[in-house]
Length: 195
Image (cartoon, helix red, strand yellow):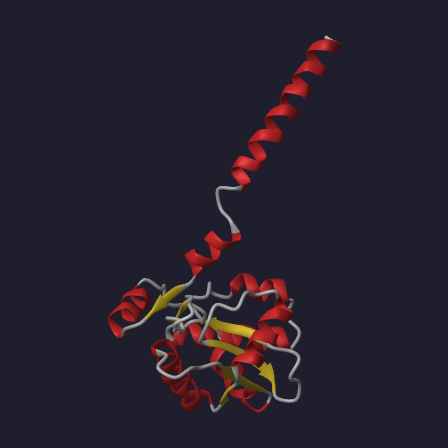
């Protein structure tokens, strides 16, 4: 009985040693990044990807009041680049958000965006990226969009970021936040093959 149990344990350990690495190699970090990033170079492709993005339909009762009252506390900052279609799309949607809720919307540079992404352990995937941060604290920022998105999803993510910045547990807010669309600009390459 003892020998049978020992043999079974050795077989399991042997099989796990060979099967675990095989299953771990099925999806790499690079595979996941490619699956989550959708570079677009024209309006047709951008709209096709946006058409696949689910739209938020349910909002908490304090949604509009929370966003309006947070306008004096928080700011949205986003990255952009010349000729970036998703950046222009996101900027237009954030312009609607600004008009409706009276928030400030600013542009930040790529270097600042890369630093913020690095602090959060996010890979830099390209423009646009948008964050909500307290007006008086440049070190606390929560990403609300990686790529462009529908206005209702952006508003929902701004609401959740506002809640997290005011004390709601981050894990609760992040679970409720939409997956980022990853609809970003096509990276221009130099003749040497570098972005």
